Length: 361
Ligand SMILES: *Cc1c(COP(=O)(O)O)cnc(C)c1O
Image (tube, helix red, strand yellow):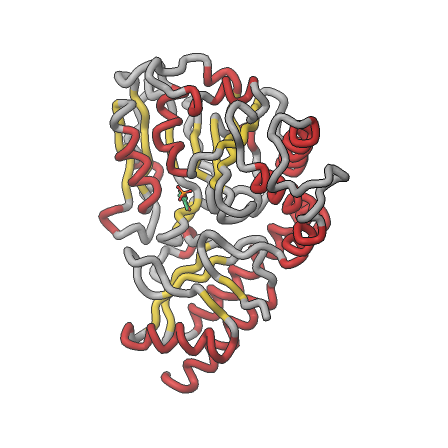
């Protein structure tokens, strides 16, 4: 029996998508072999990569002057790859907004490859509200402004794209990409590790405006070179073909749900329900400023921390709800409600939370 998996990543995939993969796992496309075994130099894999790229371009309405590449390094490899590819050398400047643990790690890593300026930070308030736009210290000559639209661990999010003039906006969309439609042309570069909202782990998708990557740092390893990877259609080295294949099945599933606008409606409804319940019940609380709350990773605390273990154990044993434990940096609970989490899963969580209050409130 499948559970409702609220894990932040690797995260749940729709059962239908897993069944699609299961059906053609032994033999894929009349090749007489599995997609797990086939050569990345075969015409079938070349076609697969082109098709999956096309599916992303269509779902996200990616403009012509952007390239999309599939990388097999973890999402956090981009912390270094971005300054390496966007800045000519380590003396160039870059602005960073620190609003949670992922943007903090990105800024720290980038210091090896750029002059990093922390333009604003919410560390002072423990990442419970975003720094006011008027207080950001942006540099006119920064190569880019980096931020993390949705901080997966802290549950804090930019719910609109910041206005920053001409400086290219670079975004870690690991837990956000494909959750709702947005205007790609507002960004210079965006990327997402697949294991949150797209596919199994082992794949990172990078979308970058082509004019930004002709100034690569000399130290950049070839496997990190966006332009080279694009020239080779993401087949420069031996890729995780299965993860790209799964991303394609996920895109097909999204199309069947009605595309990003339709899934976004469900996603926002799920989050609103959960926050409404948390806000009306004294037993639970969320400390993020309401306008800065994530609609994807809902963090909440119980009135009494000593009940955490019992909450987690009972959620599993009585309601089949798993992976609700918050990140060790934040504590409490976290419900990650990506595309694959059906609305019934959120309803089941709220029902369970109500039951738990009756017993312990
Ligand atoms: C999970 C996550 C990462 C790190 O992913 P890895 O593939 O483990 O490196 C980076 N940024 C955000 C926003 C994440 O949610």
